[in-house]
Image (tube, rainbow, N blue to C red):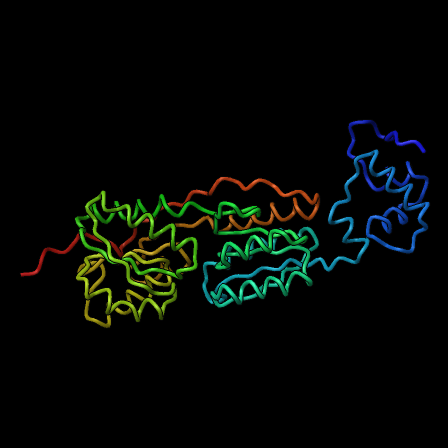
Amino acid sequence: MSTQRPDGPRSRPTIATVAEAAGVSIATVSRVMSGSSKVKQELADRVHEAADQLAYRPSRAARGLALGSLRNIGVILPDLTNAYFFDVVNEMHRGAAENGYRMLVADSNGDPDEELNTALDLLGQVDGLVLLSSRIPTAGLKQLARRDAPAVLVNRIELGVDLPMVAADNFTPMMQLCSHLAQLGHTRAVYLGGSQFAWQNRERWRAVQSSAGFGLQVTHVSADGTVEGAHAAVPEALEHDPTALICFNDLSAIGAISALRDAGLSVPEDISVTGFDDIVLARHIAPALTTVTSPKVQLGRRAWDLMRVMLDTDERPESPDPLSAEVVLRASTGPAPLPRG
């Protein structure tokens, strides 16, 4: 049995190369590599020997064809009603469709246990899994990393988790927002937080806490990153007599502006408001929202690129550097009002 590659020593071995070296059909190699028990042991041994000598490693895509791959990619996100996720998912869908995959999208309602259970359930129905703004605890992510199906983590960076990760820089632009408020004379602000399980929330709050260096004292008030959650949290925020509300995301900012109007306050004359993400509504509400433009399309594109590498090669690619995000100054922020009295 010769194992000389017909197309030269530097070419990557293919299933056809192995079939020729072993003196069997491509279909036989495919059945052996997929673990079929219907191949005679003598033929299977020849295939394995040829594959070993050629350093042939079947791609996940090739095994999928042999086993009847579902050609499905699972995507789990915390809130289908949040417009932020549309551009990310849509870009991933574009890439998946071009490569012959469908996407199955599931909503975890922001619940870490529900998200992990959904992920484990989906693993038997998909060829790969994308966890978008995942709330799963680190131990659960490590559990998923040990599974055979490839998974990509989007909008989260966790040291010690062996998964490829795609994220944007949340810290720097949030610091820039705080600096902007300080330059406008604000010294007291409230941060309307998002989910305690969200990596993005932790990063943004970490940046806000660092804003003390600008002379900005910020109090944390819990919310949930939704319009209604932020609306309900505003009365508590106002107890701290802030001149600015720094909101976890644009949905929170929209809810906050509505609540401030209900309280008879004007934005930004009485109180400034900032958001984060730059969803479509952010530029169309009155006043237009000062926020951060998250690179949603690029996040989706990078996520699919990483997934495609794993589907095609079985290799786990390196995580790219975080994408940058830009502050957009609009009409919802203005000079701090003069002290009353």
